[in-house]
Length: 375
Image (cartoon, rainbow, N blue to C red; front, side, top):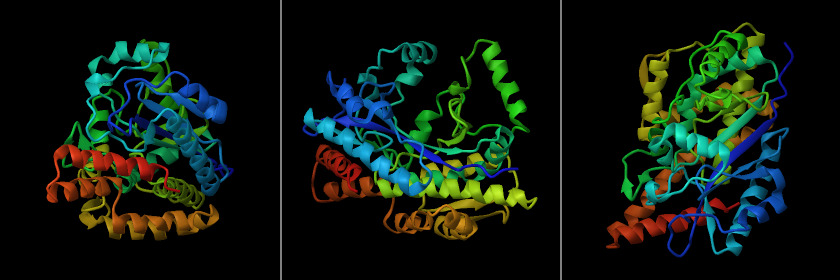
């Protein structure tokens, strides 16, 4: 089988805040989206909620070029938003905004979603990061999806940025995951035996009129319905751009590793969704602070140890893809914490110093605004 091209593209969703009130805008100012489109063209679009903006990098041959484009897009959105007295934040939840005050974008697609999902989708005041990796062969795409699913908890743990919800510390590092699970067709995909097998299952739902097409399958990992890619959707959005590139680099390196194992008639063992979901829960609750289950050993292993093993597992492929530096940056994330850790530390520092809850939450927003465009 021919080697996939392993080109990469990244989509990110940003929340737009008023730096004075620190709250979300209820609606984007007239002209903001138009100015963004004039600067970055088709790489920017509105999202379901009017307080959100989505960007997508161009197809990049490697992780480093994807980073360059991502930096340009973050900077462009920040510059345009700044002209309206606003700012984007790259976080999977806003620390205190109320979801029931938000309005969805008046587009046919979003109106249909609001009608179909009701209050469930109105509650989706969350943002994510999606990483597309090109795998042109359809059957290979499904085969690698089945295998790389094992590592979705590892990617989520390394990306957490949503500890707060409506002003409350949830005790989780990725509360986004819990919110998103209320939507149908989310979470872990089933195991499929081939592209035809996958398509048959989708066709049942399309034929019954439940969904329009495969784009309504919102799994943590899915074959893209628009591109010949395997789309990773399990992670939170990383506030720090270098952290985001680590997630992308680990993901693409894992896919490359699994492909080369297949070339030597080797496969990663397929574990049940029940077991993987247990690790997903541990990732959203504890992130990198605790342990994940190593199913081969049948025991809990500290995340830092698992990550060192992953580095060695994908090292040759990271070298092939020229992203060893980005993969090894994961050590720094583990050492200093993810965005979720930093948000919680800032909040607690203000509270411990005698500040109010409002002051603490405002300080978190101020940090998110700055860190989103720290390149």
